Length: 168
Image (cartoon, rainbow, N blue to C red; front, top):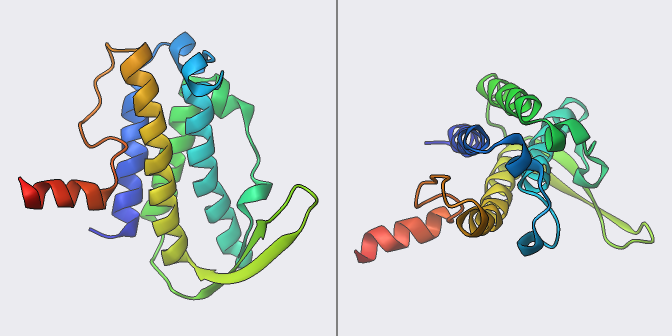
C-alpha cells in the first residue's frame, strides 16, 4: 500500500459514512461536537486534500487559505461527488519528494512560517489529519446515530491498529 491508496481508502470510508446518514443527520449541529456537525468535520478533511491538489500546480500549499465550501457541508450528494473527484485526482497522481513550499499561519495576527515539504509528506499528513477528525466523527456517530455502521478501524491510527494486531 502507498500514500495514494491509503488516502483513497480514507476518502472512500467517508463516502460510506455519508451514504448512511440522512441529510439532517449529516448537517445537524451536535452538542457533543460543540455545535459543529459531522459535515463540518468532513468538509475540513476533504478541503485539506483539495488544498494539496491545488497547491501542487504552483508548488505552494497553504491549508489556512482553503475554500471552506458550504456545499460540501450542506449537501451530502455534493460532498460525495466532491470526494469522488478527490479520489479520481489521487488516481492520476505520482508520488514525489520534490520540494513544495508550505505556508502556515502561526497566529491570528497573520504571522506565518514557510517551510519546505513534499507531496509524499503532505499526503502522509493528510492521512493522519483525516484519521484524527474521523475519530472525532466516530465519537459523535456512536453517541448520536447508533444505526450507522462504521468499521472498528474507522478513525483509528494505523500504528494503533498494527499494535493491536501484534499484541492480540
